[in-house]
Image (cartoon, rainbow, N blue to C red; front, side, top):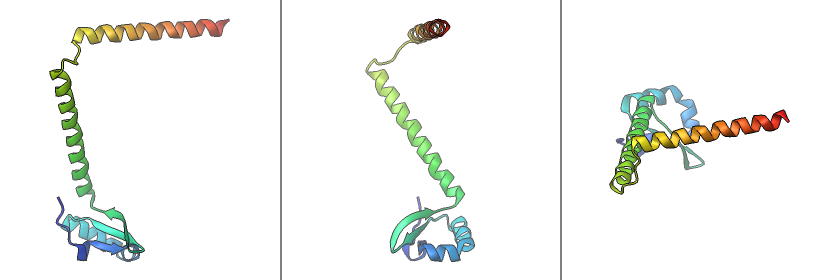
Amino acid sequence: MFDFKPTEDIISMSEFRNTLADCVARTAETHRPIILTQNGRATSVFLSAEEWEKIVEKLFDCKTYEGFLISEGQSNRGEVKSHEQVKRMMHARAKRRASAKSTSRERMAV
């Protein structure tokens, strides 16, 4: 995903503060993240909005694909319900909620 160059892409937080504008331009130009350190330890990653969008898009695609695989597995195991079954379940749930609301209103009226 990234063409990472440790000699250029790892900088201290103080250097980052002093060269913020340059860091913004560099991430936009190189499409590489900058690893920020504090006391010699990596603490944060700075990257362009464009690269962040790509990462989020890939994560969404992975979640969508994972959902598809789960659904496919459930279907293969016969763990799915027909449209009519779902309609009946939703209708029964709505009836129970309506009944619960009217019961609570009656209790409040007393």
